[in-house]
Length: 319
Length: 319
Image (cartoon, rainbow over all chains, first blue to last red):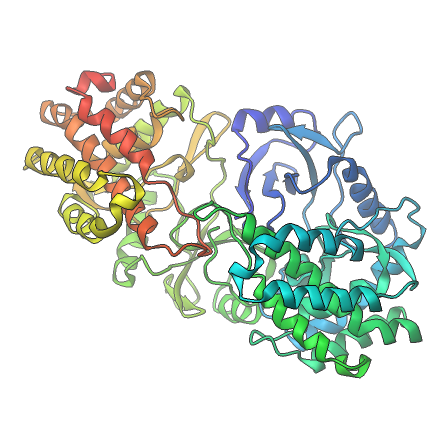
C-alpha cells in the first residue's frame, strides 16, 4: 500500500486551483512504491502523478531531487517532470505534507525480469550517470557506506529475533565490506534505487525511469551494483550471470567501466546487498505487529549477500 | 495494498491480444480495495480497469456480478461495464485467476465524508434497488444474517485475544439480533458494500458506483443499514444524525421505506455492524503476524454496534 496520507476532495480541489492543469476527472491511489503516497491524477488536460512526501524523505532534499529530474530530462533522460503551479513553484504543501505533481510516464514495469530487460536497464543507468555529470549540486548518500554501521547498531538489539546469529554474520560481513570499500572511484549522481518497479517498458523498449527520491552523489559503479542486486537474482536467490552480463554489457555500451570499477564489483555488490538488508531489517524490527504497513523480508538480501561474499571477482557477474 | 497477483508483461500482452481495445500504454496497481487485485490499464483507446478475482470471490458468482452490472447500466445506473473480448466473453483467466476488464469510471471517492455526500448516496442506493428489481437471477447473501453465527464460531477460540470478553459481548449481541431479525421485508439485489471508497463524486455530484462483488439478494433496507454504518459515523465513532437523516431522506426521495422497514432500522444496523465486525475479526485472528496484508481493526465496528444497541427506533437515525 503506497498511500499513507489520504487527501480529502476539498483539499485536493484547493490544491489544484493553484495549477493550470484543468479540472479533476479521477484520483486513485497507486499500489506501487513504499516510501511516499502516490496518486494517479487525471484532469481534463491529461494524466499526472501526485506525490505526497512521507517521513523518510528530508524536505530539505526535495529541491535537489526535483532539480535533478528537470536536469536529466533536458539531457534526454525520460523521467517524470515536476509541474509548476501558477506561481512557478513545483514543490508545495498538501494535507500537512510536502507534495508535488509530476508528469505521467507511459509504460509498464516488468513484474518478471527477463534477460532482455537487463541490457536496456544497464544502458539507461549509464546514460543517467553521464547526463547527471553537469548537475552541480551534490547530495550526500545517507544510505551509503558511512551509514551502514549506525544502521546496524540501531537493529542490533533485535536482529537475532529475525534469524539466530544474524547480528554476528552482519557484523563480520560489514567489517569485511568497509575494510575493502574503495577509497576512490568515479563519482556522480546515482539513482540508488533502480529496481524493476522504477523502470517502465513499452513495446519491449525501455520507456522511462521513475522515483528519484533516493538519488545521491556516490560511486557510479555502486549504482551498477545496486542494479545487479535488483535485477539479476532469480526468485530462488540464485544469481543469473546471463542477466548480469547483459546488464554490464548494456552499461558499457554507454559508459565503459574502469579497471578499478570492475575490480570493485564484488565489494560494491556486497555493500549494496548490505544497504537493502539493513533498511529492511530496521523496518522489520521497528514495525509493530499488526501495523497497517507492508514489511519486506530482509532475509532475501542475506541470501544475495552470501552470493556476493562467495563471488571472487567481476567474472562472477559476467564480465 | 490491493495487488495480490502480479501480472507479468508477457501475460498481460497475451491477455490483451484477445481484446479489441488497443495497445498498452500504462499499467499500475490501484491501492484501493482489499478483496481483489485491481489495475488501472491505459491503452491507445482509453482507460480501463483490470480486476483479478482473488480467493474470497466464488468464481461461480462472477457471471451474476457482471450480469448485474450490465443490467444496472441499462437502467441508468453509472457503474463499471464488463468489456468483452473478441469472442464475446468478458470473464476470462489471467495468471491463474479469473479476470475481467471493465470500463473506467471518472470520479473521486470522498476521503472525508461530509453531510452533502450522504443525500446523493442514499438516493443512488435507492435507484440501484429499483433498477435491480427486474434482474431475475438471485444470489444468496453468504454474509447475511444466516452467515453470522458460523463466522463467530470460527473466531471464537481467539476473539478474546483481541479484546477481553469480546466473545461474550458478541454472543449476547448476536443472539439478540437474530431473535429480532425481521422475518419478511421487501427484498431485492443489494450492493452490500457501498462504502465511501466505492462511490465516486465529480463536481460535487455523485458520478458512479463501483465494486459489486459483495452484491446479493437480501432485504433492501439492510443495504440502507450498511450505508448508515459506512457513511454516518465520525472518526470518534459517534453517530452523526444529520448525516443519517440526509442519507435516509435521500433514499426516500427515490424509494420510500415502509413502516416495517423503518421500524427494523435499529436491528438491521446492529446486524450490519455485526457483519463487518465479524469479517474483520475473522481476518484479524487468521492473519499471521508479519503477513504482507493490511488488516482492518474489527473494534471500530464494536463501537458502532454499541451505538446501534443503544438506539431505540428510527428516530435515532434521523427519521
